[in-house]
Length: 398
Ligand SMILES: Cc1cc2nc3c(=O)[nH]c(=O)nc-3n(C[C@H](O)[C@H](O)[C@H](O)COP(=O)(O)OP(=O)(O)OC[C@H]3O[C@@H](n4cnc5c(N)ncnc54)[C@H](O)[C@@H]3O)c2cc1C
Image (cartoon, rainbow, N blue to C red):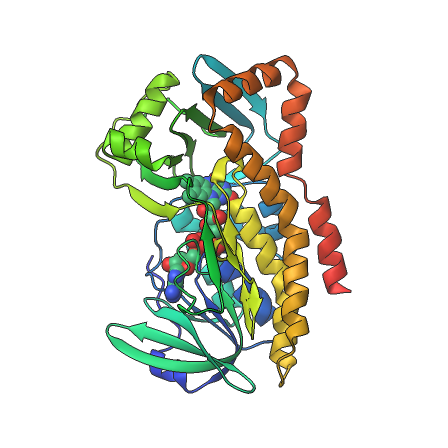
């Protein structure tokens, strides 16, 4: 069901907003809802119409599920009945391992993102879809957000702006205030969701095929469709001619079956994946989720990172709302908190991304994991650990 806006662009313009959130992906909807829950007047804006598709492996790991549980959104997740994830089957060349997963859920991004927006609206967040937004100039006690819809441009003011606009950095102005660094060898993402009534790709298992030029993950989502998402070297994609053919080649090498609609599916692509944007906070503006930085998706943590940063930034956003005079200390505190929250997670993921460039190393790693299953368990536990997050959440609240 289509999600319509809760107010018009001209009505939105009349209000001095406490918080404007640019981007209604997982990070944006959750921070909007959390800020409204804290009593702020919040506007959530997205350039797309919802439900919308998004290139993603569609796997919520344990950390992500835990954040959703903590903020009271577990019923929304349960309502999907998306398969519980209990196994990861990884193939590289002639090697293969299957390891148990401690938890997780496979839910389509069309479904999940729309449900999180609905939950934000239920918390009195105002929602404006089909509106392109950009951070604008600084006022004494607020900051401008520039909005465009169907050729019409307008501006409004907010005490705090959260940029949750995803990978392509479109919510930020082209100015010296921010710098985006893209790793030159970064892979690009591609994905699709297909109907498939075969018995292949049993629900509850993540199927990963890893090759020299990239990797692809397949999983059944809540309605039985197969979600496919991969990260590819740009050269590898060019050589194969399309993401569908690149994926087919990876699946064949892994001896996975080829879904019938693979080649005719409606594929979407992404910009290069591994990047950082700095600073993650500037005058009345906070960056979260992919907008702040992203590393190749092999460990499947992107949504958890988006949700963690959404939850943790809320107290800094509250400080910005209360500050009539902007204090750079608020920005510095979010930078420190962001680093504490993300640095080791992103470093760990970057390590995997590097390892994946060498099929020989991957093959050796798979042999080691097959010989010492406890090692695989430790790695999976590391990705799904939320103890550090709990500690930080506690500090933030107190
Ligand atoms: C191939 C691949 C596989 C992945 N697999 C997984 C996985 O299995 N599990 C996992 O947890 N993560 C995975 N990820 C990562 C995950 O998809 C992202 O980390 C996550 O979606 C980030 O959420 P976000 O809210 O920051 O951004 P997004 O979900 O990208 O949302 C950003 C929103 O901002 C909107 N927007 C952008 N610019 C503007 C603008 N100027 N004005 C208004 N709106 C704007 C967009 O329309 C979009 O709706 C994967 C990523 C890729 C590429």
